[in-house]
Amino acid sequence: MNRSSFAAVAAFACFAATAGAHDFERTGVTLTFARDGSFVLDVTNDAAWLEHRLIPFRNSDPRGTPSFADRVVLFLDGREVRPQSVEMVANAPPLVTYRMRGRVPPTAHALRWYYGLPIDPYPLTIRRADGRIVVEEIAGDAWSRPIDLSGQFAAARVSGTTVGIGIAVLFAIPIAIKVRTLLLR
Image (tube, rainbow, N blue to C red; front, side, top):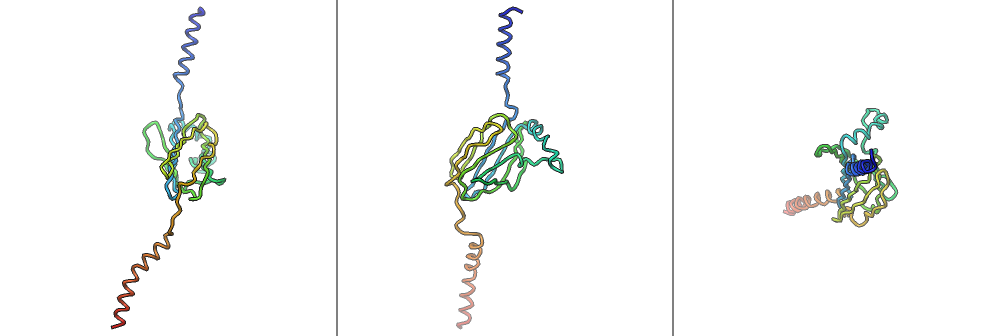
């Protein structure tokens, strides 16, 4: 093989490797907050890739089904917040999405995020309750920088118990008026 042929083959091999580069993980994360501090966390990956990545964790669970939530960490103001529910939701093949729901305290200020499975960089999209959208590029198997969450949550001004008592009082007033009217006759 002469030098020009070798150079052409080498250039083609380099180009093909670059053009054929592929993000097998297809990781995408969206964290959506509501005013009361509740959140929905959607983590999307290539289904075959995720199944392969979860194999080492099967032995750690007695049922042989590793909890996806154990691979995700939401760290708020120095404390871990665990999702209250985890479910796999339908997605367009070949993707799979795990949806986690939970609640953060209305006083939450700073979020740090970690997802222990990806190697490639991926976007973390945060949809704040105040309508702002923050996109953080996560460098694969790495923690996010601190992300400001302050000012978007509103604590309930009236508790459910107070509302129930108020409704009971409103129903009791007409009854009390009727009873008083009957007693005064």
